[in-house]
Length: 115
Image 1 (tube, rainbow, N blue to C red):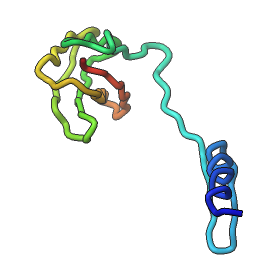
Image 2 (image 1 turned 180 degrees about the vertical axis):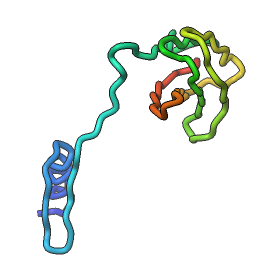
Image 3 (image 1 turned 90 degrees about the vertical axis):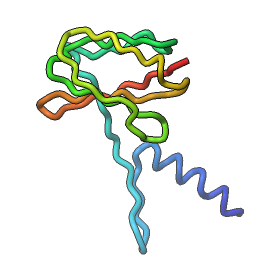
């Protein structure tokens, strides 16, 4: 049997959470998730955008960092109100990650598409 045909079932089983033990090593997959706080989710809209986005939610004393797809930080600012309008028209078109970090250390990452 060709080796490639053995890899596909292995990848599928790892993807659904099975653990394999082999004499030389062990492979495992665990589920992790990041969930928004249900009582006051942070929203970023419109998405996709042509130049400005609104960020709303519990934003008091929240740090915002914007990263491009290469992982370079392209913007950073402190948000202090329940709703903030952010102009990103100077940024080139592409996909950006908005990382919002509160003073207690919790963070939320939102993907934003700039046209």
